[in-house]
Image (cartoon, rainbow, N blue to C red; front, side):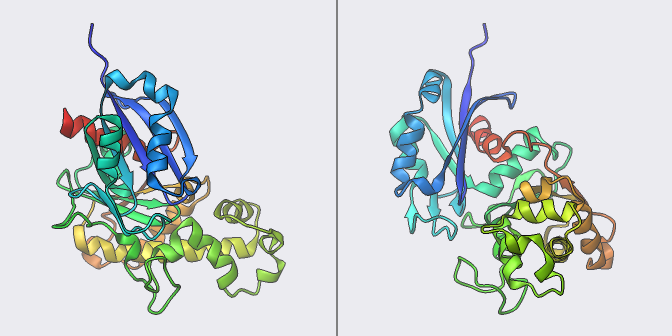
Length: 314
């Protein structure tokens, strides 16, 4: 009988953390989620996952741990100055998990993990040149060229959410102004409710909500709310224009959009495609696809993080 071999994949986000036990066929055998913000110290999160009884039940068959996290440095195994996490400084997370679990542990950027998940198990299995754009609390990108993840000389390649798209624009958690994620992340969409000027603003149902979310914006746009529709159009235009510029760097075959914004049932991806083509350098026009993650029912970053183990530890 074939011995079962599993990987523990962990996706740490600015708001929530998801983790799961994954087999070599990409099936998530067990999955759970917690709020990252509930843990004042990363060691508390490590201990919480370790003490999960379901995770413990697979421990003898888990061959390693893969972690995706904001500003996760693949070379150093550490989170380094992540602006969307309340944990500050350099956090040697791979070592912390490795020491606690007694298993080989690897860490990469959360968007890189999502890209690996798409390439091995998802909507990029037929691609060797693509970029995954994660639209969550922040914006990340995982760049794949000729089937290989691009890390750069120091492990930080792919921080596209912090390319500045509007001079002296919105203040970002990184300390600079005008970064892409301040406009096209879920938190950026919420900021647009307050910061955008519109003749329709006063009449929008958004203004009656105490704590509106990005999902509220998209849901109300589906119902015809004009201000909500303006926000989505602005978000798509900003992202599409940025992707047109980014194409000049790696000439991808496709951008794979991941996250609740991309996977909403509306026409956001086609709007991004429209604005991307309008701003595209002529030699790249009509050559780049916009795809949406096919892993919306599971967590692409969890699968991607788990795939680190299968591809490297094994």
